[in-house]
Each structure stands twice: as structure tokens, then as C-alpha cells.
Length: 171
Image (cartoon, rainbow, N blue to C red; front, side, top):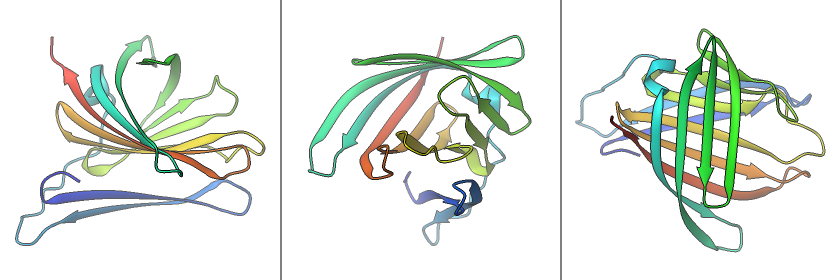
């Protein structure tokens, strides 16, 4: 939610655990005018994003921490480095139009770049017997982004929900 606007992404999987449908819901409060923006692009993501994350757990615990995400191009691939107080992680993706394919982990993950600055991050297929996460992102302004991450354990049970508010560091 940002001001009088709200964005939701519904990620639906079929019985074979494949992403079957994606629904993007863009809402605005009346009488606020609609303000729809074009599809999110790779250049908009490039740079360093400093964030604050809040993770909620089923037992109502709440943990807050800082994040730093650096997104760059190396040749024809996108490279991202994520760091938190407890995690350092680097991954690379093949860029194919409005799709980023991260294929070097335990299972392939895709990020779809969507209208209105939105993004959807899902496995190509929900992995059996492995933990996974689903993410919806929203570029609210050129230098302000929100990401919501739902994490699941190896049995598919919900483990946590994380909201990250990020700002691009302008250099």
C-alpha cells in the first residue's frame, strides 16, 4: 500500500505445482485518479537498494533488520547481491524480455516484470520436499520499492511473511 494506492499479486499453481495463473490487482481509492505506469524494466532495478525488513512468524514473533540489495549487469546477465545481518547471497539471472530466470540454485526461479512497476518472484515449479518462497514487488517511485516475501517449509506450510521497504541509494 502506498498512499491511496494498493497493489496485489495472486500467484496460482496447478496440481502439477506449475505456475498456472498470475493476477495483478491494482487498486486506488476514490476519487484519487488512476495512475497506471508501464511494465517494470531491468534498468529501473539496477543500483543499490537499502532496506528495512520486518518478518512475522506464526507464533506472532516479529523481527526487524536491515537489508542491502545490489543489482547490476555483467555482460548479458543480471547479478544481484543480497546482504542482511545473517545472510550474504549472490545470484545471477538470464534476462529474457520481461522475465528474469535464476537457474543456478536448487530449483529454477523466475521474476516476471509486470505493469505498474510490479514484479512476481516464483519457482518455475513448487519443489517437492524443499523449502521455497513467493515474492511480490512494487516499484512505487523511481527510488522506492516494497517487496513482500512469503516463506514455506519443505512440507509447504507457511513459515514467515517478510515486508521489505527499500530505497535506492543515489550516487
